[in-house]
Length: 168
Image (cartoon, rainbow, N blue to C red; front, side, top):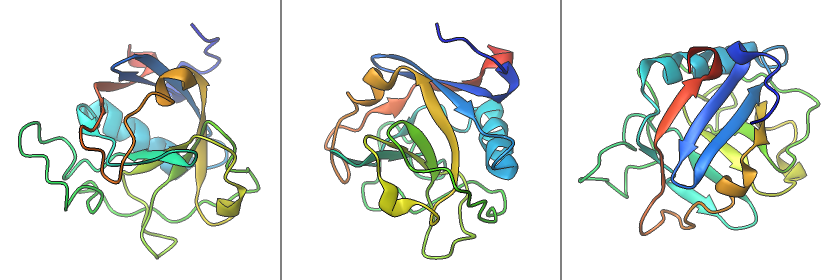
């Protein structure tokens, strides 16, 4: 297991191949970190599909409105929803979108992030300053690398469970 410095700001995502530990940057993007913890604690992220997974780019998930229907996964609506909580203001920083960083997915408006996020498969510096970086994978990136690819994937992988380490 990774050395968890701050269990309150560490997320454990259970994937089919094993756990992924994410250190949240609560000092850099406090609203985004709080939102992820709130949704994790409510169980909203459990069983949510990775609906957009582009090889060499990123894996996107977190559509809690449309991404967790086991039998009736609607490919057309996946990725269009969020939570019932208000959208978040952008918390841009100088942190680069490096491999393993967590970015807030959003629409055209910089202040439209809600529940969706992506994990970068590679350094995607063209995203710098345009999307909020609010965490990074500290263990389990090899499991992220095995997520089924596609837009959307034919057989999407899911986040089995998402927990705050302090609660695990």
